[in-house]
Length: 212
Image 1 (cartoon, rainbow, N blue to C red):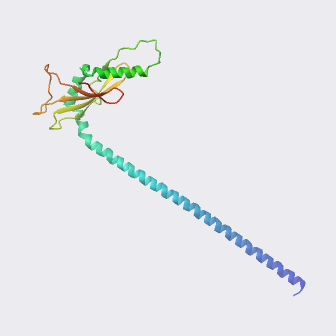
Image 2: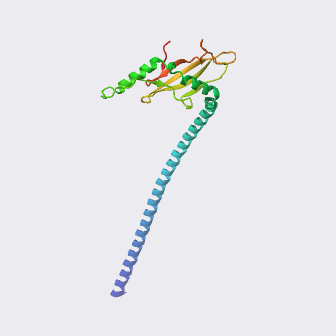
Image 3: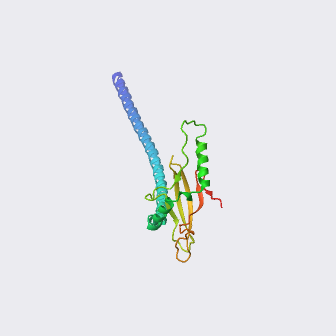
């Protein structure tokens, strides 16, 4: 082999080596990209699985809440119906006409809370006197039965709410009406009026038992 042939052979060898190295680099780059994509897909899959697990837990929690709400609805369905019956409407009309059934101690506590809230505030206008009363009998939500006609009960229990006509301040009240054990009719006082015994009230500081 002469000199020219030797040089040509070396050049061909160098080119071949360069092509092979280039092919190896390309293959290595493809493998790197492929592995990077696989790692990214694995991360995405793990995140997706965590998200699915979180959604599953949320779904289970929502299912439990729905079941609780349905149970509450089933338990109170009859009570809601009773709240709109003729007897409840008669009681609304009776209590509406008798704001004196609001305990004085509840009104006094409501006034103390109001004074504490307005402490330090100056006003040139003289405050109007407190005037708590019951809402219109046409409104249903302010008087609701807690137990009504559940024998052998000896009393009816009612939740009621009174409002101050000046500023909308409210007093929550729990009333008891004694009933005759025989026929379940309401007991009346000596004047023939319904007996409303207030058992507890909440004027803004939590439920308090009425003084005897």
